[in-house]
Length: 200
Image 1 (tube, rainbow, N blue to C red):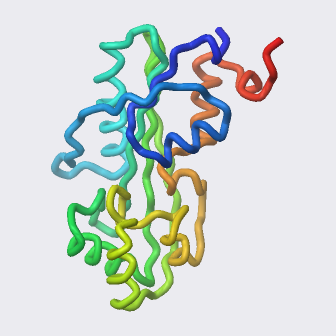
Image 2: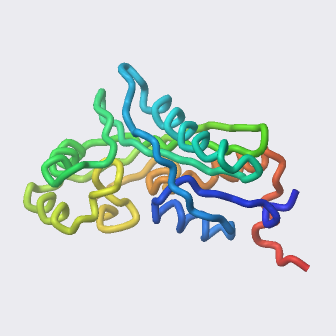
């Protein structure tokens, strides 16, 4: 089966995920999944992002059984704390203050649904933040960039100024592990070279 002949659906409204998929040449529709992104008691970051990714994908797979569904979820982990998207400025400020000068882990889950098959995996990347002053954090929050981002920052935007080191896959921090996606697509039987070969 040729990738270009498949109806592909991205179950996310994230502009970052959309942009990363477009960069690798995939044609797709965006249909955000409506799933409550809540953590279960005692749930690990890895299990959380895989469960939410699977729930998002499943919610669309039942409606579009002939489509390839791509679903993803990202959280930031710092010690025992797990950070999703901040709901307000105070929450964003608190998250960034906690991350300041410390190393945290970014977990991104990825689920693919294709006909009768489903795959669910995750990637983890470590990010070391430099020390941030309260005034820098406050002004960054005022830009509005932290909202809609796990951990309250965008590594591909102004938030990149805070990252002293990244250990692992950069795209995982953005919110879509591209290399993992390629491996999972091959596992489903798709040939990745179809993405860049010009159709005759």
